[in-house]
Length: 352
Image (cartoon, rainbow, N blue to C red; front, side, top):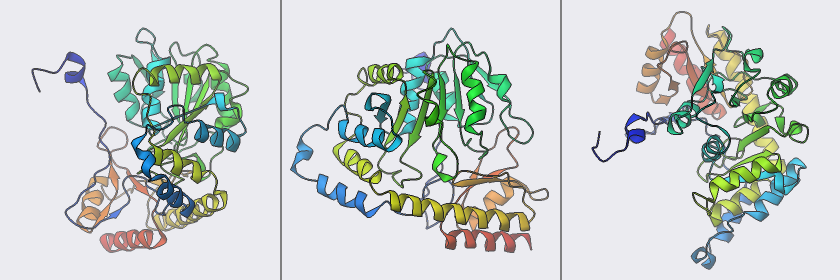
């Protein structure tokens, strides 16, 4: 701890991303990356944008990308915000809509960055326990005094709340912002974007990192009432007006213009997920239904920490969370068919 840090810096426990070891080649099933490359149209757009114009600042308002996203979701451009990954947008949203004097609510087991942002901004948190099957007790989210964050599908549990069930949370929190973090929505879930015109208090946050294979490009976006979008822009432009560079803007825009490729790649991930879940259950694993590009697994006999370490020694990375309630679970990203076959074969070998 440095004497130069202020109190906030010294008190933080930063978010820890999945490990990216470089000591040898691994099958990486620990960071929920898409196993397939981005659309060729994306790569072409980035190559075309890598020209002399890189000497110029990018468009600070990202107008072309915003119009493209608005057309895709059939909303108005003033209902769309874009940023440098959905994590940045979450950070802006926590700053824009939540206040230290009023407690916010999110699940006890969910994306751990929420707690990091709450600590960073000095927020009080009501952590709502998921039930024994990792489902969200929606009635516990009624009447929040400070706002709500729901990951849907939830990470790391993979469980999903149908959009119509979220409606009741919005109705019971009309004076507070309800953020729906939909990083994994394109792998089988229905988006809450359909509720944006009906509820001025809902902010839906998505990313190009997962279903569009652009984790390395860092592009996220939010859809909500124009007043919420204006609030995000006020925070963004008090921090950094140029959050998206020229290459990111070009690549992200192209990803929305190749719907055929987008649908085909997501279908492959979903098919592989179904195969993987069936094979894992054949091996005795308990696997909640998943609508994400990962599965959350536990075994009644084998310790999760031992499985994690044994897989790592055999060159397969999965994610282990050493925390209460989920310390017997592993989160496994869906890779290619070959990678998942290697996982299953390795597990079979270990268990025999």
